[in-house]
Structures are given as structure tokens and as C-alpha cells.
Image (tube, rainbow, N blue to C red; front, side, top):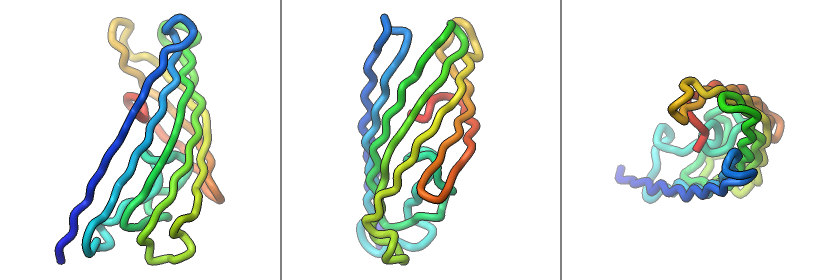
Length: 141
């Protein structure tokens, strides 16, 4: 059984409000080549698109696009609003192939150290008939 995966990400960051806030965008793709085993399949959820239980939607590949607005209301605290879409292919469940999976949510950020841009966060997101709560160290991307 031979298989390969190609994973690619493109992130872009745009400073706004006098460099205190950031608009972040990500385009990601994971592409399975060959005979992809079940445990090697990619899944929608967590890093690729928030609002879905990891593993519910799985396939040989996926494409995802997401954006965030990171609003800082002081030196150590902020909010983030995010939204995105994903789709998979090569799923054993034919109904999932090509399905558009939207996700959106909000989160809270706390800068752990005054001198280092290092955030701890808690996000809540909803997807299509699903949802998730995410604790994170650092940003999603």
C-alpha cells in the first residue's frame, strides 16, 4: 500500500487600527495521493476549520479557507472573530464529498507575558450541525 500526502498552507496577515489589530487569512490544502488508509485520511476540524468534531468528516484530501479579525482592547486582552469554509474529497461517505462545510465563532485572547506576543485563548465555534470549544496556546494560524 503506497500513499503520499501533500500539505500546503498560505497565511497572510494585515495590520489594522494602527497596528494594534490584525486581519489574518489562511488557505490550506491537504491532498492524498495513492491508496490512503483510513488512519492516514485528513479530517475537518480544529486547525483547518473550527466548529466540527475531529474525524466526523474525513477523506483523502481537503481544501479550507478561513479568516480572523484579532481585536486587542488593551495590551494583554483581546477578542477574535473568525469564519471559514472547507470541503473534502475521497470520503467513504459519498454524501460528504464536495460538501461545503462552513464554520464561524468567537474567542477570547490573553497575552501571557507583557513583553512577548504569546496568547492563550478560548474559542467557541459552530459548524453545519456541529460545534466545538477550543483551548489554545498561540493562535490558530
